Image (cartoon, one colour):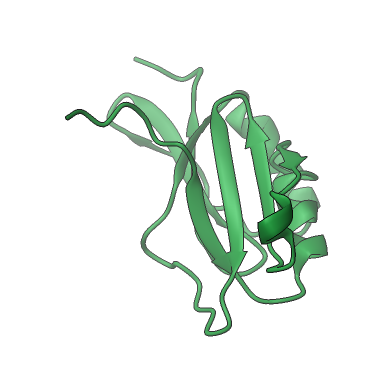
Length: 123
């Protein structure tokens, strides 16, 4: 047996915050919302994608943000994305070099930690 790929990343969110999720994941990160399957739509939350990147936000009645565990997304134009996020009111760490790439962290509207890795900055 061999794992082939990650199908999606699941993050938790509080109930009733789908508009805030769309504002961040669509409005800032540029993902597209994917309709949830009919049998899951009534649970709340939202699904997003961009190419092979799939992010599912599920409602957790005992929601606690993931402050250490996080997905790491490789992005084009990290500096530009940081500007978009900051203009939307999100606090973004200044980028730092780690190994051969530049990366930073931001938190979604619910406090989940997100790593952003610059695809264009390689040594």
